[in-house]
Image (cartoon, rainbow over all chains, first blue to last red):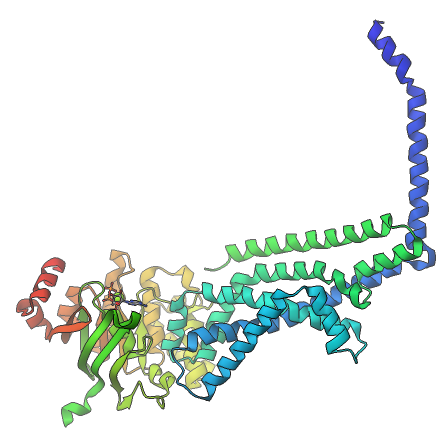
Length: 266
Length: 249
Ligand SMILES: Nc1ncnc2c1ncn2[C@@H]1O[C@H](COP(=O)(O)OP(=O)(O)OP(=O)(O)O)[C@@H](O)[C@H]1O
Ligand SMILES: [Mg+2]
């Protein structure tokens, strides 16, 4: 036995070292278990997470639908204003379109120029203060917010379509609305579908501010558990992990969708 | 009088200016297009051929002048431009088929939505026309599955679905591989033989000479000479036309 090995053996004291590690592991495990029970099992606290998850999904899903509907309308108004300016003769139609275009511009500027959390609070405490349906108000607020971003996505999609498509539709005698509905919008939506799906993913995370108006979504659920259990570590990490898993799942879905679209017709 | 009754499109002093008049794409164009005529428009690049053609169905809105189509002033606020466009088929250099729709849907969409044709009637018309251009078997294909020549033949019959009274062609063969030019010109020739009124912008001088009933030579937004193909090609008067023909023939 050489000198070096002897020194290592003597100082390391293998049996003593492993015992220490074992004791530490045991202690940590026990405390984690207690922590887990304290945070999720006692008083069925896990239900805050489950219910919150349901609320997060409900709000995100319906807000996305509202956002897409609103976004399509605003995008069409904005691009129609540009495209029809040449064609329309002065009159009622042109005036109405001009007014709608101005309303759309204000909407886009205000929504994209103010924090979402402030919009949410204004929706809850001012605009719909007589209502107490938090889920509905949050859905509307996030939907209206998302609509502004969706509108710009769809507008970019409309602008990316070859002008020849529009001209072909019009030269067949289709009117402006028919050309948009049957030819331009379907192609535009197809090109921006991945971007729209991303908007859904963004919204999942964005709804985590729902707690500001007392809506018990996933984040708020974790926060409530923290205040009941007086331990922050486990509920917050759990909430973060759940968001992460959901976002990773949908991101994967979007990339599959993108690949499908790229391989399909065209 | 009887000659005037034959006039389908009457164009007077048509101007199209860009950049506040700095660019005169059309600089006072006047001509009449009669029923059954095959008018071929030739001229150097940038001479305003496309602008002229696209003005005829108002894809381009003229700065001044008048276009009377079947007695209706196209530029009047009261004219329903969508109605008049149904009577003017247009074929583009880049086909502009709708990539998200099948050939059948490409062809039946407008007749069903505008003319109110039933699905069966539209499909029947579609099949008849496809048979005429030997593409009956491609009815359920998507445009991306077709060759350039096939696409352009589809684009022509798509326009014919609306039973137009005049067909406008803007360089229909310029984007095609040389071996596919013939099949498209053949369809156009058939159409002319069937009595269709046509206005064609093209660089195919053979087609102009063989199928055209009148040739218009344009340069710098003006019509410099118009005559029968015979006269234009064998006895050109204008110097710029002579120079142009020397280059292309
Ligand atoms: N949107 C525009 N803005 C400014 N100038 C334009 C515009 N469109 C066309 N022009 C100009 O008008 C003139 C006529 O163009 P046009 O496309 O009608 O020519 P053309 O005879 O069809 O040429 P080509 O054989 O290359 O197709 C050109 O000088 C062109 O640069
Ligand atoms: Mg041109």
